[in-house]
Image (cartoon, rainbow, N blue to C red; front, side, top):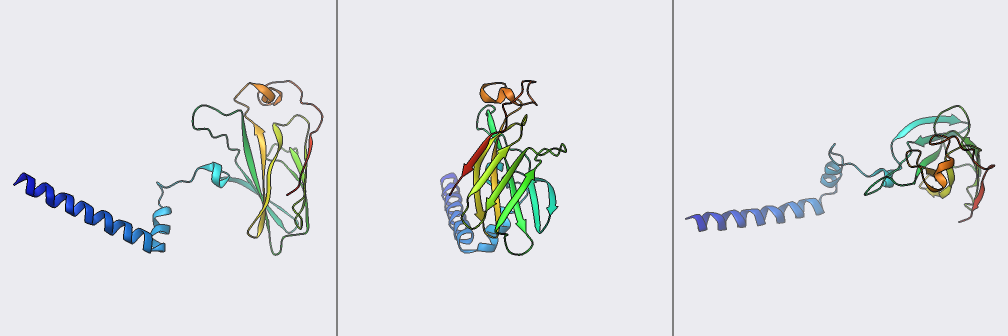
Length: 180
């Protein structure tokens, strides 16, 4: 009798698995609903982190995300901050903005973006934790950049000059140009 009950249980489990896979793969709405459950969270490395504040300048809404310092094990020496430039209508031909990612009242870096050809000029200010521009790209109808930051909690390498982790002054402003 025990063997009969276990065979029935395994058959039932197999049928449920096949039914679950069929429903999940064939029903787009079901997969979207499942993805929106509170227990399902995307890693900030993929999403850019939560938006901490939005600035409105001219015809752009500038969304600054929280800095992301993610690692599988330990604490990484560097992370990034993502900035999204959302236009009210069409994306402007040129974007020139000074960005204050930590909302301390002074600009941490400046970007000059030519949205037609993707050429991006980048300048970090003195004394900031900003290390450089890592990504500058158009995403659907807006422009997104990711700026590399040093981790103020890790005291090693180039991050020692971060004013949040030590009092050492940073060299004069860095300037980088990225062309797609």
